[in-house]
Image (cartoon, rainbow, N blue to C red; front, top):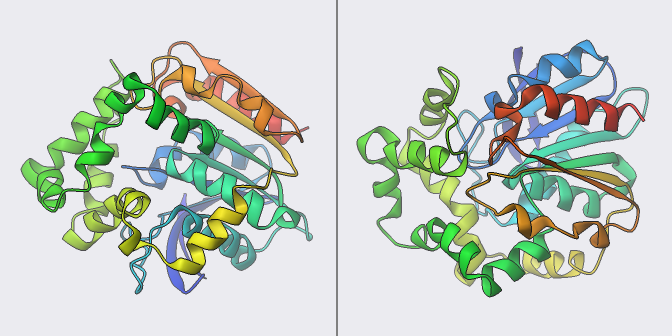
Length: 292
């Protein structure tokens, strides 16, 4: 995989890239980096796709936005701008694969620019409305999501950074029980967040959820408008039965939110980082979806 630089949506993004052909944009979540797709990128390249996986806004070496905005819709706007900046193959629309917050970005990008996206896949994330309903109505999911509330505290950045980011390593293990991250993966994550402002950026997506002072009114208005839309392209959702971050039950019935079509697959042996825990099965499902 080679590293490339892309200027999009007022930011300079760095990304991993491999292959030639129709564009597949891969968007990582929290707390992670493009190396989370280390198993998938070569598979896509060999299958005739151009796979590009950027470091998301605020994750080094991608720039930190000057306005400090980390609302979910901003991540979706980044995805659309990246597709424009990279350019598709012979004018074809791009496919987008996202994990965790990257899945939220992929979903929102499909609403923002349906003419630019052929299909998208959400890994380890239900429809956003389902998650919000579970967050307010399910004790079990609220318990799983304790870290979201913890990140609102003023000392959360220091707590996350303490003992060489031990906090985030424990989150990984809680979210994917019994899974040992591949060598170097957590080190890459720590390097991406090594400066306090990068850690602040990574937590910013959670803080923007609950704090109006961290929200841009125009983006909030746009996000509210998007809530009334449904994707116009087909979608694929893959979740892990052992996910310790978002319970597998939260995504049940999500097909109803996708009138253009959605396939949902549950991987019994995997947790939140399912694309690393079961790379063969996830790659197979994604290729079958992309090749249709």
